[in-house]
Amino acid sequence: MEGHIFLSVKDLQKLLGSESYKTAHRLHLSLREALGRKSKYILIKEYCAYEGFEFAYIWEVLRGKSTPKPK
Image (cartoon, rainbow, N blue to C red; front, side, top):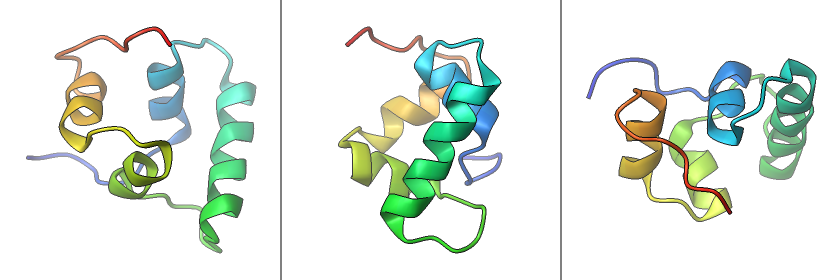
């Protein structure tokens, strides 16, 4: 696998299927708080564990090989 291992606000936008940067940023902040992160970085694996997603699926979505499934 190549690319970054951190989940950015823009990655969250893509996962949410949202055009709102502000909404994704608020979610990113709440995830950091829930995970107890003092830095501004969240690992993709931490996000997957917290939300209960499979890492391989999220990785494919972020790399454009799949589309997010509606909830």
